[in-house]
Image 1 (spheres, rainbow, N blue to C red):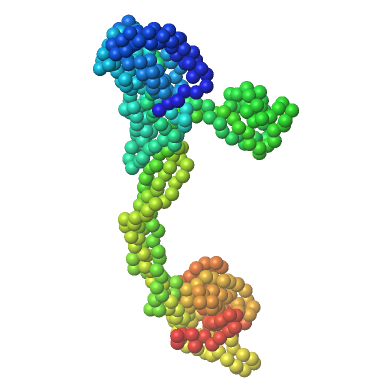
Image 2: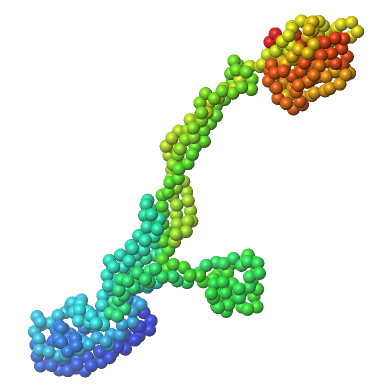
Length: 454
Ligand SMILES: [Zn+2]
């Protein structure tokens, strides 16, 4: 239901007066007639010269007109004097006279189609935007916009709705104001100026900001209750007008994402396996999961995304490996002989910090790495240990091979257990071809013969 207010009412009143004035005269005339025969007269309501109803009295017409006025959409400015109504005294029995204003109102509407038509007004955020001939037509145009938005997202798993307050109200409108479907659609898809907050950047001026938003500088100032003398500072916020869609569409879509789940690695120590060795029992296989997100868009722009569910479609398979912990034994460094000519310990003239291995024909025989490791030092010379090699082993120990005839490795080189590193000789402080062999634990020389037993 619509209500008239302000100027329009004033205007209408004057229009009604125009129609009503002759009634006063008519009333006097009627009263006179009634005096003669009170039961045989009524008022004939004519529209465009055609009689459309017989009324019992003038009040019925007034009420009908008030009803009509109340139905006219507030944004409409229909001039009631466009109605070609006219009341005439006519002979009529009481039965023939209509006393229902509602019926009279409908008859006037029916006859005044070229002036006034029933229609539906679309309000967006309390503002009248368009007028259609039916509610269904407006709804269809709105629905089409939502569908178009949804289809731009593939129409899958999504819902769309307007953020705006949408109302469709029935009313009477000037017939020429009723808009065709295509026009309504065009209006709904149009852009409007909306207020936004702009954060002032460095080097911005009122003029440059106004230019950026296609506004008059004076308008920008008044819009923000400012004068030319006021300065703008970097970081403060100003209200600006920017083109935006008339309708704001909120679209919520459920989206899914496939994700790989990394596998874990389980390490198991194996005392039967040599230290440093690794055996893969099971290769790791990553799993798969599907993550469901609820994504919200406003006019096509993503504004939020939250995870709503996670489904594991394939469990990962752990990688299983065996790690050797068994320490490598010390190999005898001269395959040629196991003959010890001088053991570890005190001896005449001092203390022997290694073992001497010698036998006839040992000169030039192979010396092998007692354990795998990295060559720490190769020293060549004819004093002390003579040509000698020191190897660092993984367990933190070192082995030393002295008095070599020649050395076949270089510092930094990795050697495996049993690999040839040098030849037996008698360089340095030596009385004949032999290998002086030492084992050092944390720099302290220990009895090598004990290490071969491990
Ligand atoms: Zn020695």
